[in-house]
Picture 1 (cartoon, helix red, strand yellow):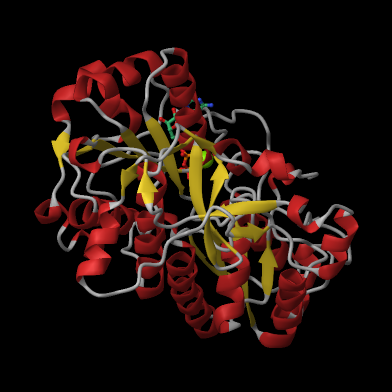
Picture 2: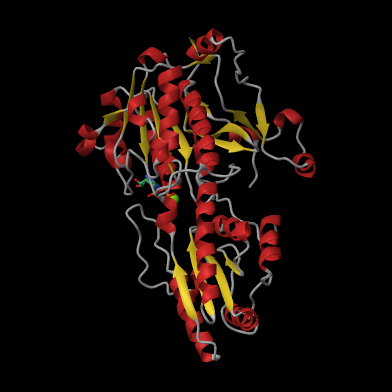
Length: 442
Ligand code: ATP
Ligand code: MG
């Protein structure tokens, strides 16, 4: 993707004229405040060859605005009302982000009101307006110990006009949207509606994806928790496969388009013998197909473990009858069940009747609380989002890029997907760890 510096500039509602209360807080604690300077930009690229290849002066290199507290803010904190909504599927860390936003707004910015919308964008519609909850420190205490989201979530399109009416009715100045690619598309429609009415409302996103498929993001929040959980399921399937004659363990993991969870989980405990991901197509039949390779492994070791990302091998499944969810996302075919059936048939036919254990732990992974690493990450993302919103950034998301928290235009987060590079070092590590062939060709 060709990026120019100007594509990376985030929108701001206007000049920041109010002193940040953050300054007072830090001064009273005799700390020297860490303010972000407007020139404190983070480079998009990190290799000399790519930087040189850009062929532009240093100050024109693609770079991102650093997130963090500003000396001056756009909204007068004392009269600022804030809304928070969580949308899309569950992901570890949602409650940590909510908690971090509420704590920062309450303890350091002392804003007037914080409202939580229930069940995703549906909570902003006229029908559900009365279910809005006011959030304070008490409401978010300890919520990080639980998975899910205290606000609830939903899928399905809502009318941007109706949602903006709700924001106006409550006098919301900043709306924080915590959600995936669909949620960010929804947030962009809200911004468009806000603009068309000439309103002064900032919309700031905290992008969520358990699959780690967001661009411009070192690692998405909840991802580490997710693959750590996944590791335990792989370990249990490994034990099962060892105990059975011709034991075959199959674990299907999240990853509609990107196989990061499958790769990391497989690398973590090295129990997987085969890892199948959407980015690397495979065939089943033929001497180098998956069936023959698995058969060979079972003959030599008496058992085998396969880890498969849910989006892998979709081209092998029947297209017919595919439905969509309420948000219009195509439902995937079940590659795990498909492999179970094909492997059972094949191994039985070659005289190795298998005992197959198939696990699809998706919901058991999505619903757990964030681990300590992700909790820290979430709270820091939340702080960054609050600083961005109070400084009047809009149509903007906060992400961590090259270990720095930065702002990027919302449209860029939905522009493409982060995927495992089949020629890159992560996939190479998976091949090294599993010993599986680089390709399964017929
Ligand atoms: P995930 O895919 O990680 O579960 P998501 O945010 O992509 O999260 P979706 O269900 O696709 O999950 O979308 C969440 C919300 O955003 C839904 O209410 C959906 O209707 C809305 N949304 C999705 N795409 C759009 C769009 N193009 N325009 C407006 N709203 C959208
Ligand atoms: Mg999505």
